[in-house]
Structure formats: structure tokens, C-alpha cells
Image 1 (cartoon, rainbow, N blue to C red):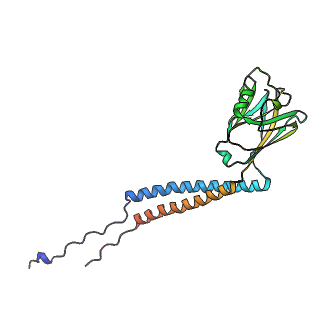
Image 2 (tube, rainbow, N blue to C red; image 1 turned 90 degrees about the vertical axis):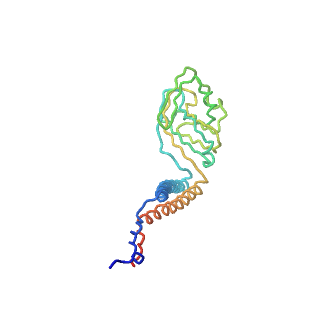
Length: 237
């Protein structure tokens, strides 16, 4: 007996597979991964600032590791330090300098980088930066430093000096030399800074990092679950 084609049951289509990675899911996963990296960086930075603020609370300043610097020339000078933007977060700087010859009178000062450059023009001196030291040859004998420039901060004496300076936006240079302008000196120096905005900045970084982390988790988890979920097929007749 031939079956009536009008009453035949059409074959059931296979159930859609929910394992696909669509373009939208891939984009969401990539965005979530990028945000997760940003979140980790912000949390790490905020944690470092919390530690720094603890040091500031205990000692008044966050200090760098002390370093020893020597030169046979007339002066030691830092590279130009730009505080046009950092001055918004740093309130005060303290520099401690100890001479290897306690009986020798030292001079330490902070002045505008352009003024220091003019003062040391033609003078044999050494520049100190984060990568090492650079010698600048010259033949001119410098004028006595105490009255040579308008120093933003200065100190003079034997053995140990402490420079305390309220930060102002500009390009600055730190200079250390013998008070009588004799060539040759060796010193041990340590810098410290204080920033009243540090607790606020640490809190902002931690809060932003955590919020970014939550967003990253959502962007990663949702597309992964959707891609791995199998859609249930139609129930057989």
C-alpha cells in the first residue's frame, strides 16, 4: 500500500549546535582579556602606592636607595628633572648628601635646569642620571656656587647636607660641589618625596582596577558559556 505523501512526517532537522564562536563572542573575549591585563596593572600600581604611603606615614618621605657618586671634576649635577606634570602629585622633595671627606665643606642646591646649564657652561663637570654618569669636559673655573644662582633650595656645610624643597612645576637640576669650587668630590646621596595625594591616588587605582576586573570577568565568562552551551534540540514527535 502506498503511503499518502500528504501524511508523511518530514524528517526532523538536526539540533543547532551551540559550540560556535561567533565574531561578537570573540571580540568580547579579546576585550575582556585586555581589560583583565589593565585591571592587574592598576591593582599592582595601587598596592605599590599603598605601601609607599605607609612608608610616608612612618618616616615622612618615601625614599630611594642611596647611591655613591664620585668625580674628579668641579661638580656633580643631575640630569634635568621635569616636574611639569609630576608636580601635581609630589609636594616636597628631600635630598640627603653625605661627603666621603667629612671635613670638606660641600654645597648642594636645586635650581632651574636652564640656569644651571648656563652656570656650568665651559666647566668640567659630571652629569648623573638613571643610566650612569656622563663627563662634560671644560676649562673654565666656576664661580662660588652660593651666590652664583637663584637657588630654589640650597644647603652648605661639612659632612652631611639636607635639601628640603617644595616642588614647583619646571625643569630642575640638582648640583653638588665643593663650597670652595675645588675639583674632585665623592658623595653618597638619597632622595625622598612626600605626596599628600598618594592615599587618594592609591584608592582611585585600586577601585578602578577592581571595577575593570569585574567588567573583564563578565566579558570573558559570558561568551565562553554561550559558546560552550548546547542548544537543546526539538523533541521528537
